[in-house]
Amino acid sequence: MKLRQLFLINNECYKIGKKHAVKGIMVHSTGANNPNIGRYVGPDDGLLNSSGNHWNQFRPNGRQVCVHAFIGKLKDGTIATYQTLPWDMVGWHSGSGAKGSANFMGYIGFEICEDNLTDRIYFNKVYKESVELCVYLCKEYKLNPITDIICHSEGYKQGIASNHADVMHWFPKYGKSMDTFRQDVKRELEKNNIQEEKNMDEKIYNTLDECPDYAKPTIKKLIDNKLLEGKLINGKPSGLNLTEQMLRLLVINDRAGLYK
Image (cartoon, rainbow, N blue to C red; front, side):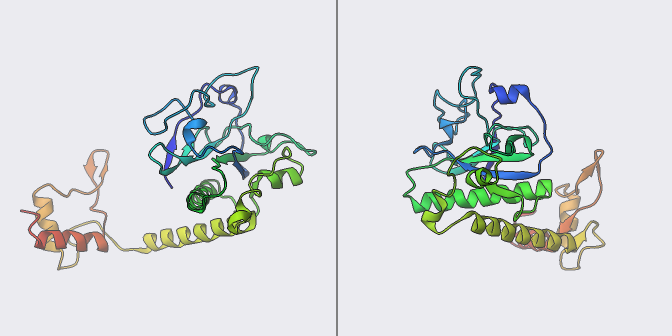
């Protein structure tokens, strides 16, 4: 995921700044043939090529809408995510249904910028980016990807959103649904957790004496030349914090003559 931040500070929603406890995620798509994030997010930060009609404007008598993030194209054609509200701020993205509004029920809402809905390559890229964003948010707020992620059309069926079709007018064109999306988020979240547990179990070498014999000459050389001091706490070295993989890489570089 390529996550950047440009808060819509001039939008009335941001100015009101009401907070919420995050309870879920609502997936939206924009409903317009314009895949560029700059159509909605501005001013231009050098990457967006923003339009003059972006949402970072105060319109008290106009369209009052604001989401937490957009996923789409930068001006160089690559895909990114732009966070546009703090995650713990109430957004204006769901509208209301018979049972109320997801806006005030703790839902983070993000928009996927639509194209003309015929480009499989673009769809696959923004789908992947959306999964990765949801993995990040599920980890951050301890959300269950199966029960805590819905799309706008599902919100309408639950009575907590206005009558919109997104994203079920788009996902099925490419063999996807919200059920497959939730399963993909769950799968990636589990892989992410396994990797984190693996990293936590990996042995860490904090002193020269702890290092294996094959690496000691290299590590001593780097320490003597003040090229390796370890992480700093209160300005003082507090351990080398080297993994086995890092040791091997340093030794390879040393044997290749990169360290004098």
